[in-house]
Image 1: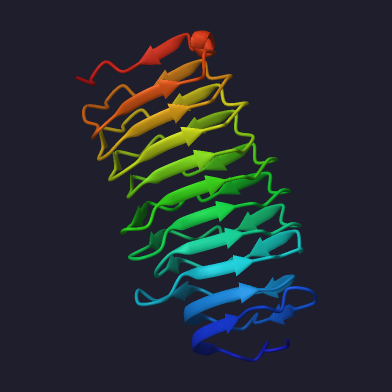
Image 2: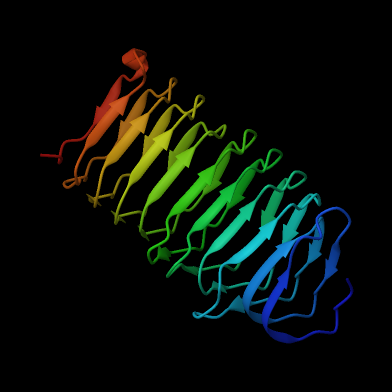
Length: 239
């Protein structure tokens, strides 16, 4: 599908073309609703989706790199999933993800090795923050992120989770089945609105939440009988 001269469009939905579809939209600069099911895509000039947009969704890519070098704002959610060939996502200028109805979700990308969203400061709205089932994903960088509505990370290959600026999780805090994870570091996190669950992370040795004062219904650390590895538990402010 060659639409390389298209500059703007309110809604872009190209779905159910999984087997052979390649899409060229490299001149598109803004769109409201964007849903792509395809094997490859070019969005190198796209800069933003609006606040009223539907979720920005990309599924079923077999290409190795997703490049959006001009993209700064996602209006209403991000979903990248079931991309069998994807090894890298390059969004160096992305600062804001608003997710009024939808969340930030990256999952089932078996070859993805790292994520760098270091300029993103907030993921706000009803939708959650989720990174799930990327078995080669060893590092993520969200060093500027301060606020999320919920936080779920599970079934990847991470060794460290370090969120140095995150202060507030509005709802659930859930980390599970990260079998290589040794260190959790959330040095300025003060509030988790609902339950805090850290479960089934068998290699975890250090849990650092020095400013956490408030959690909701439940606080649970559980490694199914293998909690002996945890030698540093820093929760001095939790009462």
